[in-house]
Length: 203
Length: 203
DNA sequence: TCGCCGATTAACCATTTGGTTAAACCAAAA
DNA sequence: TTTTGGTTTAACCAAATGGTTAATCGGCGA
Image (cartoon, rainbow over all chains, first blue to last red; front, top):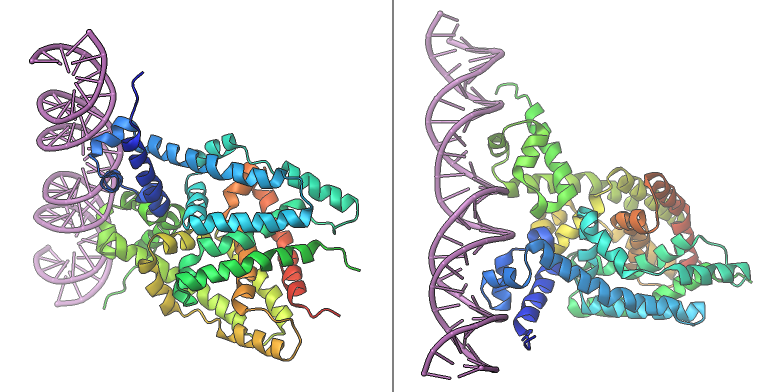
């Protein structure tokens, strides 16, 4: 096997990643990816047979990058409250660095669940450990009773929502890039406070 | 002026509304709207000159329906905690009845802010009254100090997020339609509790 | 130096897509 | 009954789009 130079392939791939996440599957044009990668449109099909296949490669890459990052948090042996703080911090950082990630994933999942679900499932999101930890703490009377689905929803909602509504903050709350990142930075401490307070045993 | 029968126009319009919100601007094909309205494709252009114009009509209709509904809540003379409960209830109901509404709006706003922002601004979201009410309550020492942007974000995040991530609940939490609506129903009381607890003065 | 072979391109293709046109339809006015 | 004018359609159009092909490029081993 010859030494394959992957420069072209990875140029195509990262261009595809950017454009797909920016504009969604339906809004993406193959020639735009080719342009951004600085190559001929035919080369796209030489490396990735079709738009669907290229898209699949992109979402595979995304899930294989971020899902393990999340699983690492959920499976860490850390006190619950610490784990909550860690989750919000890491998740916020990921979304700050990838402004379109959450909106992209949620929209593709909404518009065409089939295309995404299969690959997401292969990546294996593992919420069981946190759920177990939560139930143990409840059983031990360390935190108040709450359905884990609600608690996790609260945690994720509060963390993710600002990023998928970013334009809204920019257009209607007059936040520029800097104010917005200041805002999400503040939320890194605010969110754990709210979540912890909502499950802390009252004395 | 003759009596214009608006049946065709409104058939086109509601078909457009459904398909645009289901699939987004880029995912929508004019002939699908025509099919669903049961008419010829040329009629679309007879009533609404172009895809852009038809889309604009749809988002105008959406904003003119729901923004006033929200403004009615924010401007009501109601104690703050009541207002919070009312907001979550009404907003949840709107989203339950229009499963794709939030995802659609947020995605279009993300992908093409320009097209949406102008019309959204015309509809005049009026957050000033709640913000004022919040600041008054803080000044009076009735609630704890918190930036209004954070509080409103918390409220809206917790309410809206499950609806834009609905497929996720279905595919990964095994919720069917019934369980999901049960879930969002539970949140109608859960969310105000969390929000109120997060601003309630500690004794 | 030559031939091999993966990488790359220009040109091409069929289909889809948003949009137009000219004719037909049809109810009501004249 | 004829005319009028809004409504509706079949047929058509040009551009865009995802994809293919055949030829060319260029480095490397024989």
